[in-house]
Length: 224
Image (cartoon, rainbow, N blue to C red; front, side):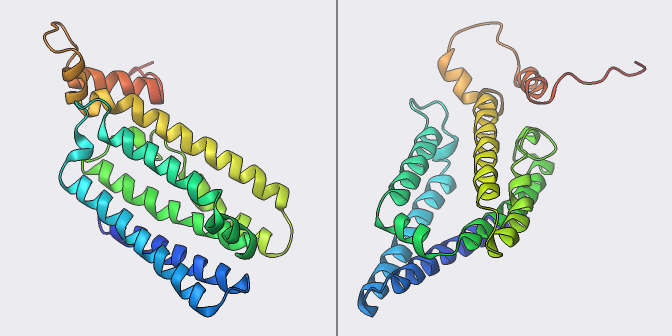
């Protein structure tokens, strides 16, 4: 399942490059301009994936003792990059010339991604609260993407697509919020750095239990 975190980004990068090439071609751009736009998209995607891979491999993203934490900067960079793509020429052409159903269907990648995240949780690499058995319901976006895409491909369902998009964004924000709330417990260096020298701090196990209750509610009492 770890391979999914390599295969899925590569497929998404390929889909992005194809979308750029398709939208440039459909816009009537010259063949040379289309090739140049696709090449820049491929170069940008390769550079982004390489940078994040190196940061993750080096352990930089686990350094919660830094202020601000590198992972927080990564999330900020992702948001800024999304806005940059959406409100510049690439985003406008993708929205204008790539079929709506295709833009929706690509979000189906969230289904295998969530399954892979669940496997990492079983191995103790990821907090269980970040999976569909905890508080992460982003898998619903991946499953419903196929259904919504089929409706959109028939030329209907623009209101449905809008509602689906808003709900999907809310589910994603829920995951981010839960992830931030788990940082202290899952990466205790963050807590140690902020409270160095303090005594009587709850153990990591106690913190995880507290965060689990916050995300999933109190456990059932045996015999009740």
